Amino acid sequence: MKRWENAMRVGFLALTAGVILASLPTASDAQRADNDIFPRSIALQHDGQKAQDAGDLDAAIGFYESALAADPRNRSAIIALAQVARAQGLPGKAIGLYREALVLEPNDIVALTGQGEALADKGALELAREKLAEAQRVCSDKCPQVAALEKTIASSASKRVVAAEVLVPKPVVATVGTTSNKN
Figure 1: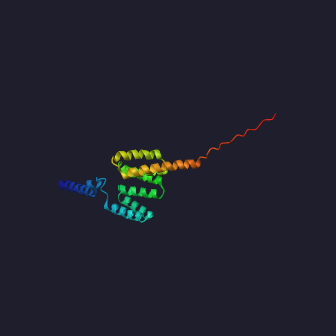
Figure 2: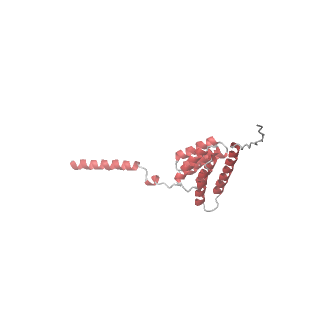
Figure 3: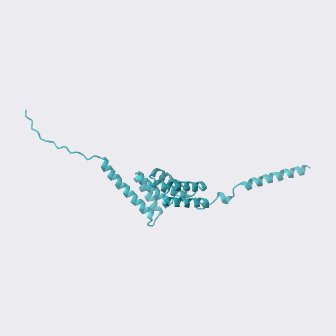
């Protein structure tokens, strides 16, 4: 009888362990490649792109955020959200979103140059130039993204000079007249 009880306990433990192991995610689920994005996330991202192309930025944001909820590693959806933020005149928000994309892939040329452009929009030209140097290192050939960043930095630099000229009053040169002193 003892033997039978021991066998039942071992069998029960084995069955319990099997159920627990079967409920855990498989190694292939946990170790997906960085570029292996869930199809639902990609479909939502495409819907967001269509809405953005149609000029409906609010709907585009909704689709992109849904794409990220489906798969937070969808770097393209993060970059698309950053581009929408720039289009809405929110360079600070765009900088943060590009940073998130760069955490996933530090050498993403679109995220590097996009963040540089947003920094230039915000007036942080020195940081934008640092992003330009990083982008030039990553893209050894002539990349259109690098050229666009160079153009944005140059444009922002000239805007700052013009704005400074408007804000700084021109010095007034007083003419000193000669008066005779009659004592």
